Length: 72
Image 1 (cartoon, helix red, strand yellow):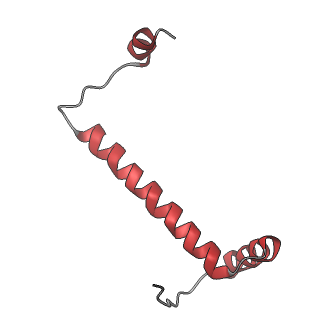
Image 2 (cartoon, rainbow, N blue to C red):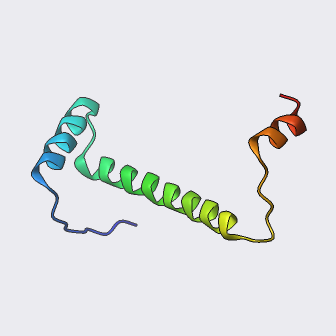
Protein backbone atom coordinates (compact mmCIF):
# COMPACT_ATOMS: atom_id res chain seq x y z
CA UNK A 1 0.00 0.00 0.00
CA UNK A 2 1.30 3.45 -0.88
CA UNK A 3 0.48 6.88 0.49
CA UNK A 4 1.11 10.14 -1.26
CA UNK A 5 3.26 12.64 0.65
CA UNK A 6 4.06 16.19 -0.36
CA UNK A 7 7.40 17.70 0.70
CA UNK A 8 9.52 20.70 -0.17
CA UNK A 9 12.94 19.81 -1.56
CA UNK A 10 15.78 22.19 -2.41
CA UNK A 11 16.08 22.84 -6.13
CA UNK A 12 19.61 21.40 -6.39
CA UNK A 13 18.39 18.11 -4.91
CA UNK A 14 15.47 18.04 -7.32
CA UNK A 15 17.86 18.54 -10.22
CA UNK A 16 20.04 15.65 -9.03
CA UNK A 17 16.95 13.52 -8.49
CA UNK A 18 15.72 14.28 -11.99
CA UNK A 19 19.13 13.39 -13.48
CA UNK A 20 19.19 10.05 -11.67
CA UNK A 21 15.58 9.33 -12.59
CA UNK A 22 16.32 10.01 -16.25
CA UNK A 23 19.54 7.95 -16.26
CA UNK A 24 17.89 4.97 -14.59
CA UNK A 25 14.52 5.32 -16.29
CA UNK A 26 12.87 5.19 -12.86
CA UNK A 27 10.52 7.70 -11.29
CA UNK A 28 11.37 10.32 -8.71
CA UNK A 29 9.12 8.46 -6.28
CA UNK A 30 11.09 5.24 -6.76
CA UNK A 31 14.39 6.92 -5.88
CA UNK A 32 12.94 8.85 -2.95
CA UNK A 33 11.44 5.65 -1.54
CA UNK A 34 14.72 3.75 -1.95
CA UNK A 35 16.67 6.61 -0.36
CA UNK A 36 14.31 6.69 2.62
CA UNK A 37 14.51 2.92 3.04
CA UNK A 38 18.32 3.09 3.03
CA UNK A 39 18.30 6.04 5.46
CA UNK A 40 16.01 4.27 7.93
CA UNK A 41 18.13 1.12 7.74
CA UNK A 42 21.31 3.11 8.41
CA UNK A 43 19.60 4.98 11.24
CA UNK A 44 18.59 1.68 12.87
CA UNK A 45 22.18 0.39 12.54
CA UNK A 46 23.50 3.61 14.06
CA UNK A 47 21.10 3.32 16.99
CA UNK A 48 22.26 -0.25 17.64
CA UNK A 49 25.89 0.91 17.61
CA UNK A 50 25.15 3.80 19.98
CA UNK A 51 23.23 1.51 22.33
CA UNK A 52 26.15 -0.93 22.39
CA UNK A 53 28.65 1.86 22.97
CA UNK A 54 26.63 3.10 25.96
CA UNK A 55 26.09 -0.40 27.40
CA UNK A 56 28.40 -0.66 30.41
CA UNK A 57 27.96 -4.46 30.41
CA UNK A 58 29.31 -4.75 26.85
CA UNK A 59 33.12 -4.77 27.05
CA UNK A 60 35.15 -2.71 24.61
CA UNK A 61 37.95 -4.67 22.96
CA UNK A 62 41.07 -2.90 21.73
CA UNK A 63 42.18 -3.37 18.15
CA UNK A 64 45.30 -5.15 19.37
CA UNK A 65 43.26 -7.59 21.48
CA UNK A 66 40.87 -8.20 18.60
CA UNK A 67 43.77 -9.01 16.25
CA UNK A 68 45.23 -11.43 18.77
CA UNK A 69 41.86 -13.11 19.25
CA UNK A 70 41.33 -13.41 15.50
CA UNK A 71 44.98 -14.31 14.88
CA UNK A 72 45.35 -11.60 12.25
